[in-house]
Length: 184
Image (cartoon, rainbow, N blue to C red; front, side, top):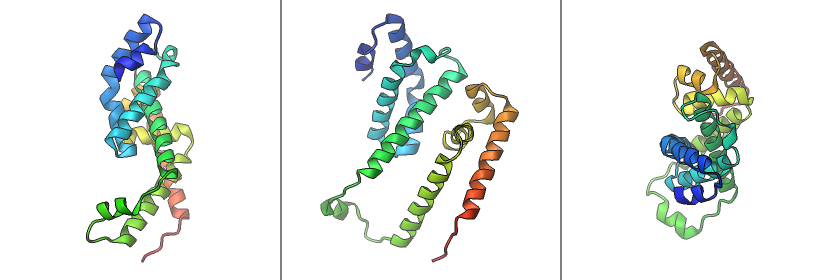
């Protein structure tokens, strides 16, 4: 796929930059996509779509080793993966044959439904956060970056990262408190 991506770029220096970015950040970006999509093939598609999107924005990158570059790539792959997940969920159609093949012998439908509902609720709450909180929150808890790495990636101070994480957690907690949980 890298060869196809490189053919989309006219400028030789941009080709070299794109190739270096691909080789350096491919694994990290795939990891981010896998955490969202939970599917290897979709994650690879997301990676390629992210790099296609990046081709038009190569001039925005500050440098190969820059924390800004890594953060920018993570945000692109996250957004592409979320878009793909939304599309996948909206196009959900499963035949009865597919269901019969994948349904385990014992099913706890109620538990699965509650877990799905809780995950959707949490996803909605996090997606409603302002971008400055959402980005820091996802980089920390979804991508597993340390506070120092987030600080470097987003070019903000460690204390700003901590404050944004604190505010994101408070907003999430407040939203969860407003949600009425029911015990079954």
